[in-house]
Length: 484
Ligand SMILES: *Cc1c(COP(=O)(O)O)cnc(C)c1O
Image (cartoon, rainbow, N blue to C red; front, top):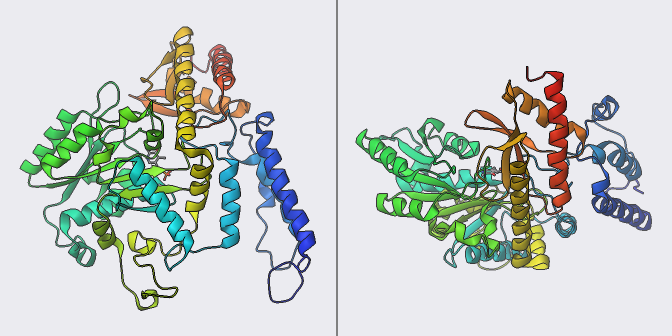
């Protein structure tokens, strides 16, 4: 297929075409028949050993690499494409996005900057998001790997807003008093990490208590802000949740927007797993207030089913966004015409310079399915969460541990003894069953089986399988005395 000339292109395009078409067909077969496979299975040692050999120096063949993929990689993925996967917060992917990603790889575009249509495509998605979330038409946005980075970018812009752009040169050395940020106890760990990576320190994130429904207690928030001001600190940012990772709780975003306006604080929303629920007419009212955010982080790779990775940050004030990241360099000089036109460039809006064309798989997914269809798919996952909630209520051996806001259900198998140990073990056994794969979390110190229903392939039969298998394995563990 490949000869020893300079280029890495095939010498026999027809043969390469046959093999690559076959690879595409094999992948489509995998997705089309995924239900017949285990959700997840541990890899045998022989497979692990496949990936312990040293750097290949000599030429091999595409056929060999494809065979290794089929035999040793494909069967041992985490399983989030499978309808029985309910662990953590993972999207299922979609085949339209998969084809788009292949096209993007073929183009091999670098979206750091310069004047080309791939950036225009990314900008169109930015405007679509501004439209969806009721942001101004000239809001800025940027694709990043995930909401961990999107939240970090937002915290850095909020830092610029509070301290001015001089902080970029001077750092925080001269910074008294210190900045403080606020978010509910249910906030994802990447927000504290964002404060850490911003040099502000994760201790400066105040974790505000929540109500029984896991929404932030706004009165507590106001007390915390007042206490910090009294102590001579400088509150600068409130982070609201549009779907917390543990329970899917949506904070009262309108109330948070009010607090931020009154207190002159930056209002950021972590909408990683929930915000795209705005595409559903039924869910949209729950997000009221999101349109007032200064910045918003979200993930297309979760509920919107775009293949990994496709995180995104949307920012109301594009100028402040640019001032936080733009850094002139001679080799990145701009021009009025030619390839160096089209300034500002995406590299002016974030830490990345080289960037792939993530926007294409998002653009294709939105073009082909449309926002309404995606919204209905999200409704369906919420309906499934409701039916799971109902089945839990009807089973005396199960109990719900948190109210169901969206599509995440936290519950456990009841036990008189060692209930936390039993449920931790139960989650592992469920995963090892290959039938369903929830994950675990802790709700008020109680170990929960967490079913996050984010996969568009999941149906009512998968919910029943989860409940039936939980009951079967839970009873077995109870009998075996794991809980005594
Ligand atoms: C997943 C998630 C994150 C982190 O996003 P990544 O895309 O994994 O970086 C942050 N916040 C919430 C609420 C999440 O669900």
